[in-house]
Length: 178
Figure 1 (cartoon, rainbow, N blue to C red):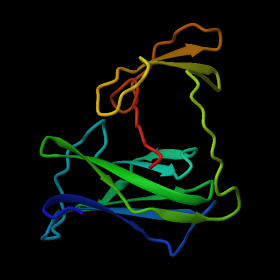
Figure 2: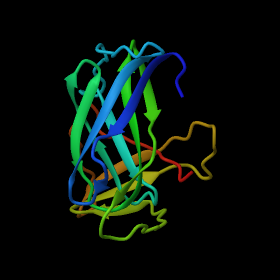
Figure 3: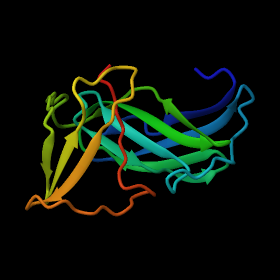
């Protein structure tokens, strides 16, 4: 509900987002209230636009980078592999400041479980050939700074050096269930 200044909005172009089918996601960067396109977004982490999508049960997420197809217009075709309700967030840098926009929720229809609610608070997770350990002081406190440390190990428990991805060793997005 931006009243003045930069706004990034989302349009799901297909009539219906469906599992296994390409869904066109289009984003508009514009000035409110004039509706003029914003064509001078700044590169942040090697991209002009970052989009994070999260399924309502928090067990499915993605990070994509739509390409600019016109002044202030970005688009990408994305294939969802699970159904249910998704919420998307976009991040842009403009005039030296980062801006995050939450977009409307929409449904992806198709075969598969609508919810796979699974709560896991493990501090060590094995993903493929890697182990990721997370460390933080307990209890974590709301509205406070909480240091969080991640260490990535190989399958033998030896810490490994990370390469940069989008100009950083690691990215973290925290999304609340509500």
